[in-house]
Length: 187
Image 1: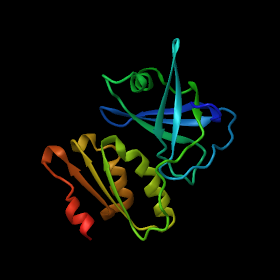
Image 2 (image 1 turned 135 degrees about the vertical axis):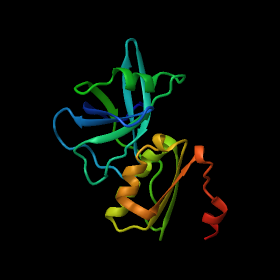
Image 3 (image 1 turned 30 degrees about the vertical axis):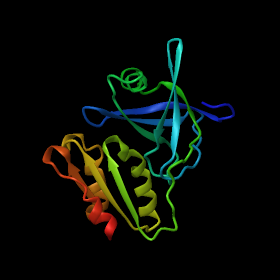
Image 4 (image 1 turned 45 degrees about the vertical axis):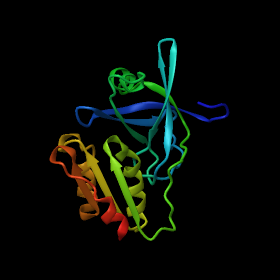
């Protein structure tokens, strides 16, 4: 983490496999206090102490910004990456004490918009989980278009459709379904 970044001491409260590639991690403060507030689109940097090496990876917060009892992230396993996702998938278990940064938002909603048109692919759905929750709580108008390889790899697609119904449109690569950007952007 960069110099001057405030850190939070957390404990992993739950680890939940979501599908073949994605696992969800829940963090609570070690001291039991509420975590700092955040807005949809925010991320934290997770500090991973792997033997003599420390990895720093940013992950989008995906829980409701209205509930700061815990932070939730999802990590897609990358078997040929730099090792952060493998560390999270193989070594992080409930009860593990970790360090994360305070939330930073480089992908915040423009709340002046009359409607939010959201486009997501694969694990890129995670910031939209918090953003749709924030918008729904405020009565905001949004439409989410989410593309994924297959239905089984549609991380949180079922949750999003259950919560928001027709505001969520799904596209599957294996069915050769594509987002019609020209049509969407023309209206």
